[in-house]
Length: 92
Image (tube, rainbow, N blue to C red; front, side):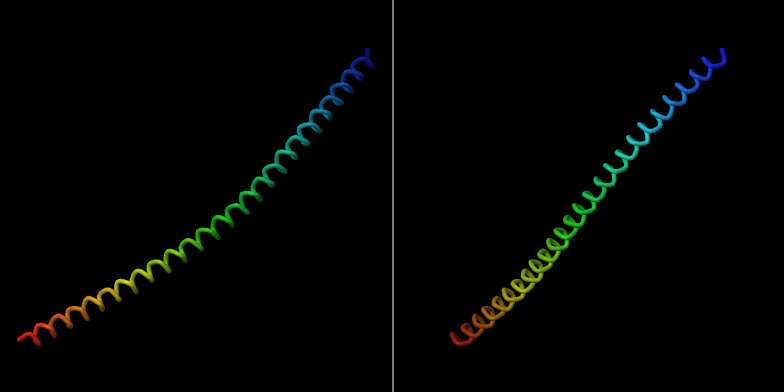
């Protein structure tokens, strides 16, 4: 009777070790996959951040060009207005 109980305990312990090893392997695989996903996500995030910085810089350049063009248009309008005033004076 004692040896049967010992055998059952041995089988139970063996099964527990087997399942413990299996679960540890699954946890390790899951953690490895998470790490790889996070590394890939980090690389993608850095790429997107770089693109964002580039786009912000381009927007700044465009805004600067718009301001410059608006100033030039204002100067041209002022010159045209001055020329018109001069023409009116010459007519009188």
